[in-house]
Amino acid sequence: MGFYEDQVVPRIVNVACGTKLLAPLRARACADLAGDVLEIGFGSGLNVPFYPAAVTSVSAVEPADLGWRLARRRLDAARVPVNRSGLDGQSLPFADDSYDAALCTYTLCTIPDAAAALREVRRVLKPGGTLRFLEHGRAPDEGVRRWQHRLEPMQKRLFGGCHLTRSVPDLLTSAGFTVTELDAFYQPGAPKPYSAMSLGAATAP
Image 1: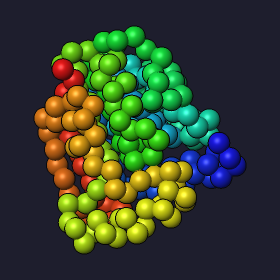
Image 2: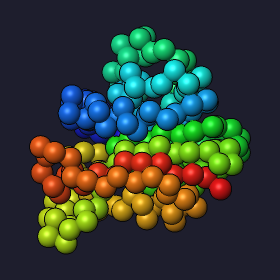
Image 3: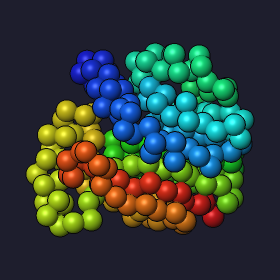
């Protein structure tokens, strides 16, 4: 990665995705996690305070060294062991059927091949395992979608490849997941092109 992607983007994401307004959404995304959990796109550990007591361990996949360093205080205060266990969500170094649950938040927008990453998550989840997600993506309204297409080139340049137009439910179903819970909404207080949210759960076969 270049200097901007390596040293600047993780700091921007740490601030932009770490606001108090997002805390209730992160709490909802994490609420039903249990057992051994895989988190892809761990970033700076913004979900760590919301891991429930039923979680026994977390394997964190995060390519940015700076993101891991920014997570230090949250990791020190974590109630469960969190280990940096991979660098690339598109190629996970874990055996099939290894995890009880998985988590991704504000991740599928940025991974270069989100479909490949989700197939990998499905592979390493135990049968019936659940992926909890909180993601932004393609808006339900055509007028907003037109703005998303206009803004996406700049968004990708400024935020490390972040897409505005990916359909989270479509990505999940195409990867073989069954979406069992979905709340689609615009995040209050944010411009609609950037805040079309999908929060829910999907189950591996």
